[in-house]
Amino acid sequence: MNSAGKYFAGLLTLALLFGSRAYAEPYLAVRYGLKCQSCHVNPTGGGLRKDFGDVFAQTELPAHPIRGDWGLWTGEVTKFLRVGGDIRYNFTATATPGSNTVEQLGLQQARVYLEGQVIPDRLILYIDEQVAPGNALNREAYGIYWSASHEWYVKAGQMYLPFGFRLEDQTAFVYEVNSFNMLEPDDAVEFGWLKGHWDAQLDVSNGTFATPSPHGKEYGLQLSYVESAWRFGIAANDDGAVQFKRRVYGLFGGTRTGPVTWLAEVDMVQNEYSPLTGVTQAAALLEGDWLIAPGNNLKVTFEPFDPDRDVHGTGRSRWSLVYELTPVQFLQIRAGLRDYNGPRDIAAENQRLWFIQLHGFF
Image 1 (cartoon, rainbow, N blue to C red):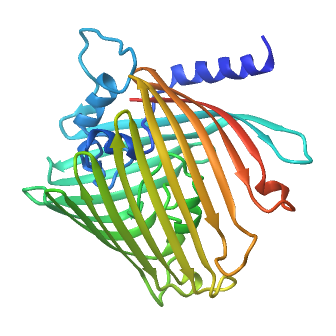
Image 2 (cartoon, rainbow, N blue to C red):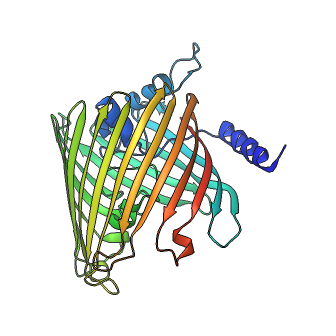
Image 3 (cartoon, rainbow, N blue to C red):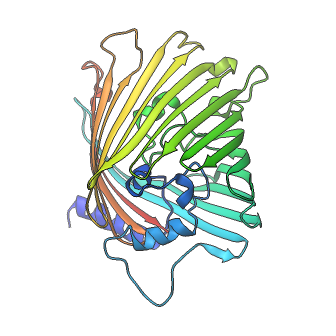
């Protein structure tokens, strides 16, 4: 067996040994006309799934679900406790102009999730803990109180702030601009309102990168409208902390045309802290997801990024082509290419990256 075959065999073995729960994939919500809270415990998406999300992942998502008389997994340990987990294992090869190709095989992440129904469907405690690689690291830990009608909620604790689409790819350029990814939570209080086609979130937090500041807090607002075949949203954040003072604005939306689902997001940040005082940055994402057959998705993305709107010749862009195969429930194989393009004199911004990822989920 050659080296690539050994890498793939190792990936497959590990994926079969461990189960996981995925980052969010918003194209699925757009494809099926769903809101984030239809599948996830977190009303803004990502992390632990609810019953509907678990059933969907076992019946609709896989190409060839394995069926038996054991019923469906819902993560319920008891009536009041639900559990889940997440593990991703990658092989990557990175080619940089003028340098040798670097190949790496390693664990990207392993997470566990806990949901405690203190008052069923009304008062919930939620924990997202990254257990590997390295030492354990808490990502989210919050409580959420729902109204009886589930039309509004209040959430408080450490959480991912809502802003645009919650993408699986945490290296997306829009995250480089807005910083609201699933690796950098913040201590916050969030009020949410969900009525018919409308969703709205208002949050107050310590500030970007969860850096406490006695001089200011970060205020965020997100508003979205969801139809069965399309959706549109706006988001804005104002960070008053001296060390990261900035304003961030975003537009995002999606639709479907036959077997292809489209996502688009445009984000802009106006920086007011040193050394980026006066620098305006912008990034965008255009994504198409083609459902070739059940369990087979082809993802194509184009991402432009402008690190300084006032300086010409510094722009970057990235193309990605990713094939996602979900052969059976709880297991996904992702393989793809990412092609980076930037200023010619900066080799690191003109890389080409290939990857294979095994991702299990339960």
